[in-house]
Image (cartoon, rainbow, N blue to C red; front, side, top):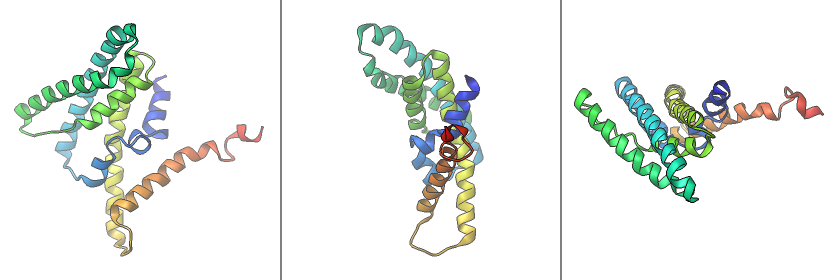
Length: 186
């Protein structure tokens, strides 16, 4: 189960590419390593605790009354409170303001929606957040490569990065339609 979740949400269905979680931050931001590491720590802690609290609220307070469809509202409130607490802790300890909220919130909503249990939801949220931060060096490498080519054209760097991400996503999904898949010939 763990390996399958890592493969699906980390690579084959890379959350930032397929669901668009944090894609704007990936395309337009350029952060230092220290900020990225602190942001990763904050996002992982926020998402993990938020999934735990939101899943418990959904399972024991919303589902018995058949109002589980309201879980995104409660997940947003819980994630905001936990994110704010971690933001204050990070500022007190490291004197860095980290305003990462949307990646944790959308990862929590995705994890609770697609997780069939608490462990599965926690794993999905963790992989979702990590896939964003693992994709950041790839985007930086693509941007450096685009500046090296220095191609003058009608496309901006951002559009070329999006096209490259789309081609990478097609490459991951291409195995399903390729001749390498023996089920296609049956």
